[in-house]
Amino acid sequence: MKDTFLIIAYMAIWLGLSGYIATLAHRQKKLSLRIELLSKRLNTEKESS
Amino acid sequence: MSSLHQIRFLLCKDLRVELRKKESLVSMAFFGALILVILNIATGIGKQVDAETGAGILWVAVMFSSVLGLGRVFAREKENGCVAALLISPAAPWEIYVAKALVNFTLMVLSELVLVPVFYVLFGAQLQGTPLTLVPILLLVNLGFSVTGTLISAISAGTRRNEVLLPILLFPLLLPLIAFAVKATSAALAARPFAELLDQLEPMAAFCVIFAVVGYLLFPFAIRED
Amino acid sequence: MTLTNRSSLFAGAAALLMPVAIGMIFFYAPLEKTMGSVQKIFYFHLPLAFSAFLSFFVAFVAGIMYLRTRRQVWDARLAASVEIGVVFTTLVLITGSLWGKPIWNTYWTWDPRLTTSLILWFIYASCLILRSAVEEEGKRATYCAVMAIVGFVDVPIVFFSARLWRSIHPVVIRSDSVGLESSMLITLLVSMLAMLAFWIGLYKFRVSLQLQEAAANELLNPKD
Image 1 (cartoon, each protein chain N blue to C red):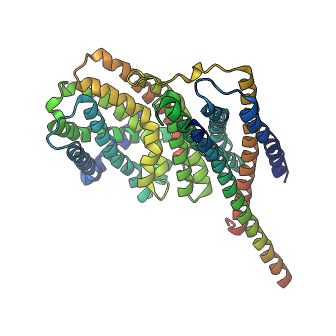
Image 2 (image 1 turned 120 degrees about the horizontal axis):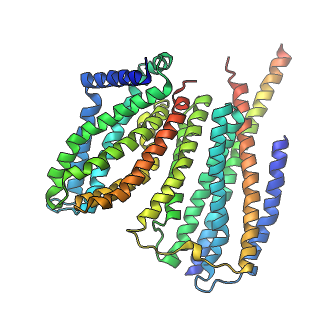
Image 3 (image 1 turned 90 degrees about the horizontal axis):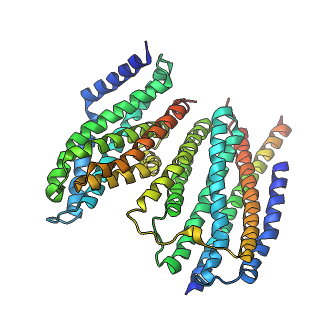
């Protein structure tokens, strides 16, 4: 009985923290994609001008 | 013009607008009475509530109706672009803060003049305390609500979701004040001696002082439009 | 990129210390006599609560600094600490209830500590909602700074008022009467260090992410 609560609590901690880190990592990934697109656009503008 | 003059001028301006349009006051009193009726039905028709439940019911009605009026205090200025006009007027930001808090205080007092009698009609059968002992509690909550609420409504009026954000931001901050008020009110409604109320009234007054100082310091930042 | 490097330094320290802490919790720390295995929640519950409170303090300081200097980096620090604080407080509340259920026989009681954490959670979660509701950067930063300061001022008041309520609510347990054995204390210390390193790494990462996003936004939509 007590062990169940312990296991649920530890699962909650690790699911919560890793979930948060995963969202942050996702945001970081989206950001680098945006920056990549931006630099590509800048390069094409430079070549055409 | 001295600060006192400025504040009185701003206060009279807002009260005059309110008197002509009556948009806040009518909806506050109406909504509060509506909540009281709903809670009366929800507690069971024909059942009498005791002092503690009654105190909770009264404060639910007062809080939810007051937040309606508070939302209008700044939204009216924002909609007409009058905040900029207020800021370039000779009135200092803290004078605007005091005036707005007083406007809200007045609106709350006036709406409670309707709500408390309605509360007594609907729930008063079992309550022994006289309504007079409620007066200091009501005044202190009005003050605490106004000094905190004016600061928060300056923030929420600057967003596009004023009506939704205002209670979300304000109610968590007010929780300690409401807790004291509910406890004091249940003592008052049960006709306990006044000295018992004092234990709750003192921290409520401290709450008002602390948030008045915080509001005075932070309001100039909240009202700036940049 | 020094920011990311330093953040990975702390993340590395946390990655080293976390497994050590978990190992110590389950194999080194003795079983508590009355509470049994559930007590092992404590070794993460307390560090989480401490780091959550630390984040709100950082948010308070960052709010004051932002209003004084108007520098974007303080807004990024504020945003990072509020967000991490809310995540950590959520976990504190969850683990606390799960610890309370078998020991106090209730998920929730209005103990001052519990009340304060819950109200803190509400205040700073509303601050996050406020952040999502304002588009203009300067406005958003000012509003959040004001809210973070007001919220932190409210903390002692909430704690004090909750202590007064106890006169009507029965006291279920006094959390400061938990005596700690030295091996438990060492375990707690290690997990506290691990959590702090984790917090710093997370915080630095979140701040740099915020600043990078703001810079990218500026490049994509220049102001003039």
